[in-house]
Length: 119
Image (tube, rainbow, N blue to C red; front, side):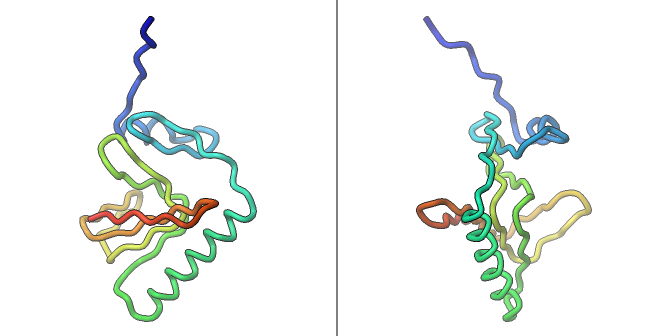
């Protein structure tokens, strides 16, 4: 017996679906995934990563840093909410971040922080 087909979304549909929904969500390969509640150790690790990135930027790097909370499109069917985000200063709009520049997304885990380079 075959399993039922999954209802897959692209990032634009996901953003509409997730708006106003309880909890924190990411889109992985077209499937919405609810993120686990955050623990104190994770919050402290995120804060340390954010401070380190901000320190580098204050030292004169031509970059910006956002803390967690922004959903970032990775592919047409994948969007993450990184724990920290650094990038070369892009064009910003009031509601969406758009960049064609090199970016680093940071996700902290129990093993070690994980960085994804875009661009």
